[in-house]
Image 1: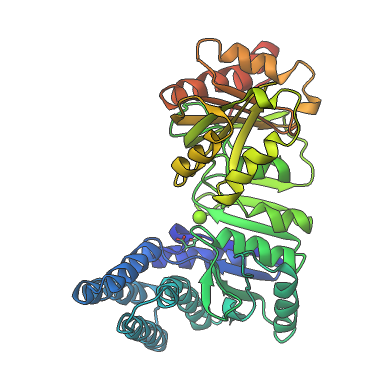
Image 2: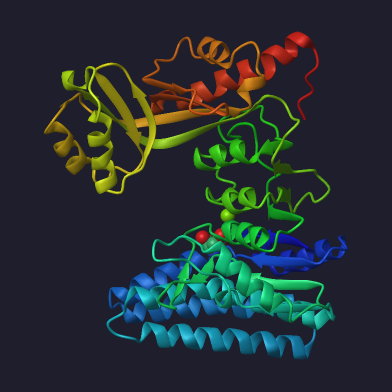
Length: 452
Ligand code: ASP
Ligand code: MG
């Protein structure tokens, strides 16, 4: 069994839903199809929730009306029979009736807000299932709210998901396509919740991991993960193969194509993840698996809005326990640290969430001296398998960066990542010089490189 996930733009137009069905027919394996909401819907639903929370009921009602009109028009092109259209209209009327009733509840709480946001996926999947029924395909809709679970820390519960999903699937042994919602789940209070923005990828990976699928395919509108940011760098190309570790680094450090947690369940259960392009289904895309036979240096990514904190203390000299005190403060403020470098009397760290920066630095100052923080920094992250890179990744990187001031370097935590901290004004230059040096220079020297 395979798991195929289609994002908002892939379901955002009636003809795109028709193409998904065509795609499903090209492959004989049984599939669980995970869908996002139609593009724009989640944003619109969040805005409706915000209006309701602010007691702007007229505005909420107007926005609900506008969104419903979009769906009313959508089904006219999605379905071609009277019966199909009537069914589609019934789905829309039901769900929008429910949204209206939620907006009316006062005080409007986060519970209602999450229920409203979940409507995007509830609508897209029912409409798509209605279409498969209309054309007579073998399919069934499984409500994600019956098996997708998160715990009190908002972490998905893979074992529970596996247990529930396996028993639900056993009831539909003869269905070729099993449609379900991405993004939405239930929390321990049995309320409707979600896996955070972009969470449908995560759903696909959780389902794929839970049922130990043959493969998870994430269908988007780009041809896989690129070796660099195509918006900033001219010569980029899709990466054919990545390991789970490399993909996780890239997803976290900026490559927007995947939700950063996506890789975890797939890696845990050893299920390969393939990134595919709905506009170009024949293109190979990117395969993420335990091993990759591709080139050693895979990609460069940048993470924006980074703040660096420089901590000095002579008390650090030959002392133990100093780092613990530092990190306890970040833990207290639930602020993840991205990069760390240390010397005998200093430690520098970066964070991308500066919400608690003032409190954190105030507490650090109680036992250390702080240099002025650097905000507006950028982490440039080079990802690959450096154990195999005999000539030395650091040499190449520093050579490329010779004209750009580097604030921090982190290398050696894994053989998959080298990170540099620079001021964001150098970001575009850094991505470009690294691209030329790491992907074009040596290949050009060897005369073997044929960039697509
Ligand atoms: N619809 C949700 C969002 O827009 C989840 C997803 O698309 O992955 O964030
Ligand atoms: Mg997405």
